[in-house]
Image (tube, one colour):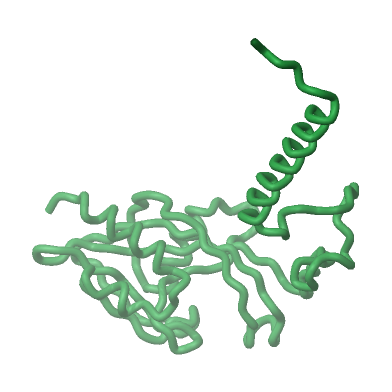
Length: 210
């Protein structure tokens, strides 16, 4: 026989059900970081409530600078049972690769070939492929008299004949030149920015047949 509950008993059961639900919710909330909950609903977060390092800042303005586009070449030739790369000492006394400004109306690969031959004293090179682009920021202490320069440099891989010779060309700001074995070219290059380009050139050369 089922005995119906009194009104007082029903209210007591309902009261305990609500209390148990609140206890369970409290246990769940304790496991979640308070920072994920907000008491006020806003269209946008108030800056006053955010830590200083999280507040939105106005976009940074780029300092006054000169923009340039250059093109250069990584030159390799077959030598004995391997390959050698051409490197040069530049105006800053660092070992690097030939590059120069792209003239108005000039194609990137044409500019790269011209600058490469001029700075290394080469008479003939063959275009292999485009390697990629790097961008650099620096203070120009020569032509721009200390101006901040942002330069995009596009590099191409060239192959020189096995009997090709290179030599310094001071008028082109090339003060020393030499051929470096493929296994040493990364450590001989003075500029970190160009290393990804060197890696690509090395990977490409590895596929060549002797």
